[in-house]
Image (spheres, chains in turn green, yellow):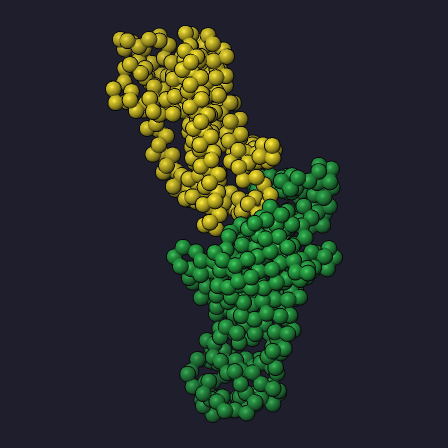
Length: 320
Length: 256
């Protein structure tokens, strides 16, 4: 059974901005699904449509078999949503925020109090529960945010870039929490992220989104498996045009791409290829700063499917 | 029923927000008092104009200040909505099963609580400085009129906030409308003593409906037929404005 089904979603915003351009994917019940892409790829728009906040121009989507347009009420009762903004009321305490959320879902008073108490303990806010959230740190607000999304016991949880802007330690704690929710509580989780390592670590399945479409989908291992062999990253002192040509026709080297000052290539056996590459570059007078060899990463997958490195796509979107 | 229940949850949230920011309580409650005393002193000699029918200006002025204060505080309702939008709080509610209309109703209830307290303070202060209101029940009617007007204006402010989503727009609209609407009424001056065109304008000005009916309610010789008509008109206006604000949610959701 699929808990989330998105079919051919299209959404255009005023000014002819095509945020989604036929987005299709599905998420099996009880799994974590990662929607991976740079800023502006359409991840947040997809979440808005799936959570009934926005409406697609065309295409259909179902959550737990309920259509997001015709049966929006049932969808809203089935989902928990953690948006990018913390969305906690700063004048209310942690407990009051949770209580308000639970009441909207019609939870019975005793049950709600117990649930709120339990969740506050779980997310480590028991001591701060009766303090006004204005004084919470970013990490605390994020944890309260997650507790609020869970208070009514949803079956599908949406996390829109849950760790953006968090300290590294807090991020790792958040990953553990997300793993616990999916494994321990059987929740279906849809996670959007522009951190490759996050998708790699958490998602059982993922879809790489670029310009509103899925450009590649599968398990992280499948996606990485498509790229056989190793990758070589050569950092150059400058970015001479001749660098790519230098590696032309070199045995066992393919997919050569220059990305700023970083030259990337794929090869069967890195140990054999590296000396050849360095020789060829030296022969062409290209100065090398460093060489790294790695197993294929999601970054390579992204590069291969979109023709751009991840960080670069992110920067372009950021400048827009 | 669910609308009301959810509305009460929202009202509690808004009241807690106000309660925990004492500076706002002070502004909300002290400002009308300043207006009452300031305008009362400034225009004191109005009573000496031939044809002015009251001999206590404060008594004449009080219903006007009650209505004007309600108008001002409701005009700003949209600002809190924009704050909710910016924080993502509104979106959180919109992906929950909360009844859309209750998000408006909750704000209106919150506004009504504030207006009742505000109005009572104004009336008590007016009595302390010498005004007399023989119809004690008329004070309840006056507050009801002010609350209905505030509900209508509050809805418009919320609708504007949802559509424009910018604080500047709400500020501009409030500044543009609130004072002129107050001065195009008989809040400060007896109807027979203002220019003819203002008399005409005031007869279609909802602010003036509330001021005149409110003043008639608290002073002797009340024309209850007129008061009831005005109550009805303001109630109808409020109903229309609630419908309008609810529609504005749809416009908002199309834009997110």
